[in-house]
Length: 443
Image (cartoon, rainbow, N blue to C red; front, side, top):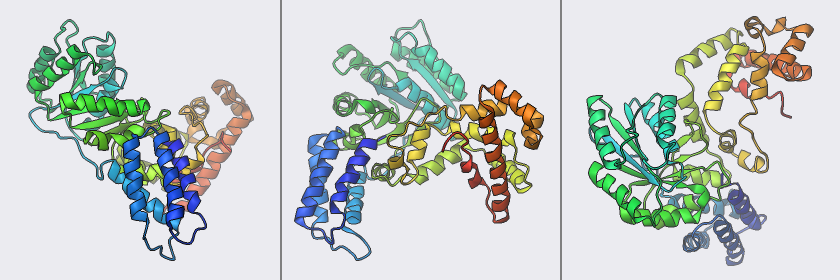
């Protein structure tokens, strides 16, 4: 996400490296590169010009403190301007009414149905009773897809496969929600083109009939500036409350995220990465600006971990670590928890400085599979007591997992080293950080 933009902005700031002060000449050169980087990222040209003009105006005349270089000062100003460009502060969704109704709209293929499932999961974790409603009456697999997602996240789905009137389906769903005490209703609608008048009329009638407390427009971020132009047309018809950017884990240039608030004057409320139901984050402009400038987003990383890791499980694990009883069963369980947090490259990008380091490295979400295969090829006794694993057992585990004996040895050695580290850190009051040291198939 934003890898190319981050790289080009970093190069732009390098023009100030070694400069003792900010001058019109060196700022002009840097601003030119920043503007080129934004336009290359598919940011609206007018928006790119306005932002860089603001950066230039604020940079000139600034007194550079002895402890801050001109480059650092310009990064700070750029960070503030990008934050302001994307809305300044986070805006939450409005949950009002009995039940609260959230209407989902967007283009074909933008990821509306997947987002509906993710939003249901997100709200369910907040303790809300959610009902998903299938109002995409045109795409044959849409209802089935929503049912699968509902089952995945443990949320009821209302559908009438034979009914071809989206408004009537939605109204019947509201009656069902009230009768079954569902507090939030998420209405997934058909993808539509702005030029399709009949379809645009349908979504307008849906909004008029339902009077939702929240209408969200789902945008595929990979479509760049086209997404912004489409959002503008939809907003003129729907007057939606907020935007959802999907597929930010793809080869996104970032233009939609940076331009859409300024052009449409509606906040980005959520960003979605990957297909996993947990890969949904509330949008924070300041955090996104930090990530774009290569400063990471530790707060979001911690929040995602808190959502994923069970408090009771954490206490149990901490107790085992203190007693030096951490075993392969515990480790396998921790791998499953980490995988639930979302796309691995996206997670790594939240760590300050790691986005740049991972720019040209493809992090496969299946990278844990060899480790899992080896552990699952062990008996329960071997998982609990790794010291039992001798030569013949290693051969059996290697054959069972489809890995080599050397890989089994690597895993056993690094697991042993990790337990020793945990024991040492435990004496100093630590322990959890040791988990990150285990990577037997990396370098």
